[in-house]
Length: 540
Image 1 (cartoon, rainbow, N blue to C red):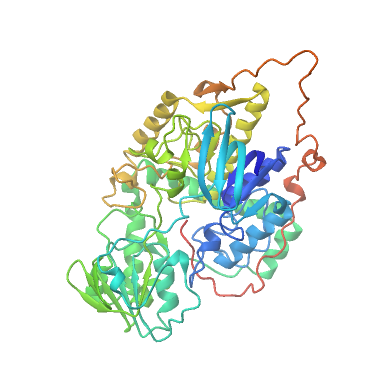
Image 2 (spheres, helix red, strand yellow; image 1 turned 180 degrees about the horizontal axis):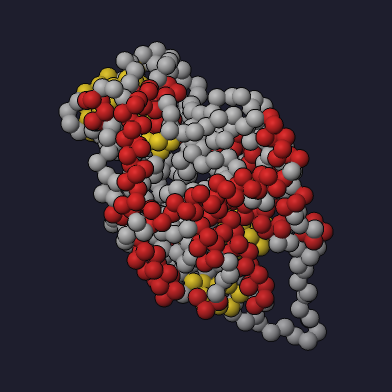
């Protein structure tokens, strides 16, 4: 049996839950949230490795419509963020819309019915509009290392941590030096007998100025909610002022680079190790990582840094590209995710019978980060060129939610059975402007190879401007950028058989007439222990 809904949201991380809240506030309750796992949380559910935390301040890494006065630390741990998302789910009454155990296997556009037919592991759905909020940090990337199948020990990715496997006293190899690895290494180092870090490229690392949020601060935020908004506004403003250094004047980052080198020198006294850990590219080209424990952990006697990527595995022996060998009992891959080649794109079949992956074979591109040509009534949250290098992705998500809301309003205004398909020329023009601005950014000129770049060397991940600019660009849907599709005319009925009157499921739902306003939201504390050690953040 197929369940028909007005909107199907794919994924229940920040993007999917934000979309669900916005739909209800727009008076739309005829929607489902399809989630392949058994709980909400997205990347903050999947990434539960030791030390997992966020590298964006807590009061900025949360929804503006659901402020939380009780963040326990200035940089929150994974458990606190996941608890916050569970709380948002309950506060806004989203649970009736959630469909767990529903991984999307195929999503096909029906040009006759003007709807999406969705096959999932938990049943079939039909939706007038699809909002894809699977996110770029959903599917782990594990390199195809020769001999991996010969390794006799345990192997897992940082986003699929095996908590049932005790690493105490083991020889552990960590592959990669991204945001996850710099949190994992300090967390494991005290307990393992030996830790070997395979470093293909050293990251730039700055101290993470994390601390517990005092009880007085939290009491103030609860009593005077505007203080929480003021704190969020200050954090946002500082990052907006930094953007031009990343996007227009990368040479201005030289001062930050000097500070990073001072931080390295203070922590690593061994000149040989310090040389291995010194990047040879402009700071900011890869995401700047925050940690006050990473360098001290690498300086410990039970840690080896191999300044080369993993090349081959021979049984329990790991061989680096430079020939260095190391023995290991466990391999932990901190090698990131399928960002520019998201697997969901292979499962979305558009109007011309082409998959989204095929449409994006030369690089991802979507109008205002949301709409892909040939895929009517399909929108992405955190789509192409919506990522950030120095601020909170929640800001970008909320901007895209504004665009989604206006998109649905426009469909209602147009009336009848219709769909909007982004015009190829509009997508090309938008993408050309974005890529032109990208040319002078630090991400393209900094001399590094990062996960921001696709297989063709194009940066299809990051937004080359401020969050304010993006919000203005996504405030309204410009219908001139879309083609309006209409369903084929129905067969005429005889006068004796009048057409049935369609019932509007939203109009029939009294809850939809009373959407929750942000002023009514009063999040409860999400952490039991405000003094818990603040681990570091998943650099999402």
